[in-house]
Amino acid sequence: MLDKNRKIVCLILMGFLLVVLQFYLQQSTDPATEFTRHPSALQSSTSERYPLLKKFTTENLVEKNPPFKRIVFWNEAYGSKEYGVGFGRDALRKFGCPVWQCETTDNRTDILTSDAIVFHLRSWTKSDLPERRLPHQRYVFWSIESPAWREYAHADQADEFFNWTMTYRWDSDMAGPYGSIEPIGKVPLHPDEDQMKIYLVNSRKADNYAKGKTKMAAWFVSNCNSKSSRNEFVRELQKYIDVDVYGKCGTMQCSTTTDGQCRDMAAKNYKFFMSLENSLCPDYITEKFFVMMNRTILPIVYGVHDSHEKIAPTHSFINAAKFENVKKLADYLILLDKNDTLYNEYFWWKPHFKVMFSEVFKGMCRLCAALHDKNSPPKIYHDMTGWWEKTVPCLLSPKIV
Ligand SMILES: *[C@@H]1O[C@H](CO)[C@@H](O)[C@H](O)[C@H]1NC(C)=O
Ligand SMILES: *[C@@H]1O[C@H](CO)[C@@H](O)[C@H](O)[C@H]1NC(C)=O
Ligand SMILES: *[C@@H]1O[C@H](CO)[C@@H](O)[C@H](O)[C@H]1NC(C)=O
Ligand SMILES: *[C@@H]1O[C@H](CO)[C@@H](O)[C@H](O)[C@H]1NC(C)=O
Image (spheres, rainbow, N blue to C red):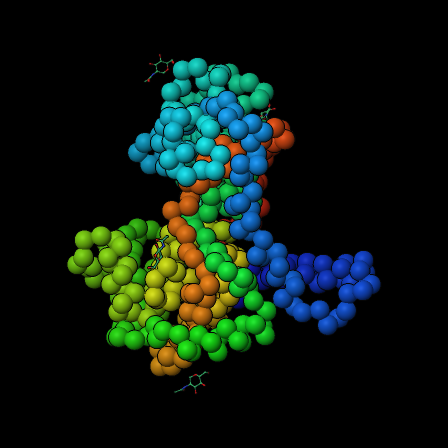
């Protein structure tokens, strides 16, 4: 769909070269490796993300009842300074953090006694910063939004300022992804091809997820702005199939009272759900995806960084960006709509995984654990914009074909 976009072609080429290079390096350093090695071996790195979430456990605690660390939430984040976890010595324990012995506060008095100060990027400003800082204090960069919304962020003024990052991105010091899809048993997130065939065949004996569904695709959208061309994408898709658009930017209204009930309604009546983000940035997958993955409906995403592929089971969602154009995607959806076997194969993973959401504030647990870890090395972000905006750039407003 984006083959006209040179940047993407470049990225894909570079990725390909890296894979080839890696392959040759492995060949040359390990003579025992045969050429018959299964291609899925190259995927193994993608399944190593979730263990990162387990890293900060009570192992970080040297003592059983350690003295509390102090975390100050400096500026406003979505109408409060609670950063999703609240205040006090009990906040992180109530929040379910394994290491919770940190006091959280928004009280700026006695700032020099704090161990970490958390700044919301969106309200960070040079004109309102602590007057003094001590060398052991960690300044933490916090954002749950993507860097595509540059007008709200000032990373460019924040070089040599932050010590740690806490965002949804997996390469943050404290990762807080919006959700996760983790194995309950031994089934891998990305089975190899042979295993996959078996799982897909077995899915035919399981529930019929197509049963009783009379409608094609639904989209819930409240923010009509986007940097991901999602409106254009849905409009194009509507040329070929029915996509009911609910909410402020659409024509349909969900008559039930809660968001959860609306989502249940969609899962009951529709085959597909548009889980489209407002921007196309690496790892930026919000609750829009996870809350529908936990239901009996097949999400359609638009992902250009393979982020969904990395954190969700193989063959569990449809990535529209992998299709040559919107027409081809529509043809495929029509095929799935007509063939319940093919449709149900997308739910093979349901008995083997659990979907977690509301995880986005869990980075705070990792912060508390890291503060208690005597081995946490000093760190400085010399080039904040480089990390936030350029490591792997967002794709802004792609042309939809
Ligand atoms: C902030 O902390 C100081 C010193 O502990 C205390 O005197 C003050 O009452 C606190 N402010 C608020 C708003 O709780
Ligand atoms: C549906 O797809 C399955 C799996 O590819 C195939 O075996 C079956 O013949 C198809 N059914 C119809 C009605 O096309
Ligand atoms: C996902 O759905 C299952 C089954 O309906 C439910 O038990 C579970 O609590 C849900 N998960 C979350 C995180 O809400
Ligand atoms: C945090 O960053 C500041 C400013 O770059 C630096 O002076 C300080 O040594 C760092 N502290 C730690 C503990 O990493």
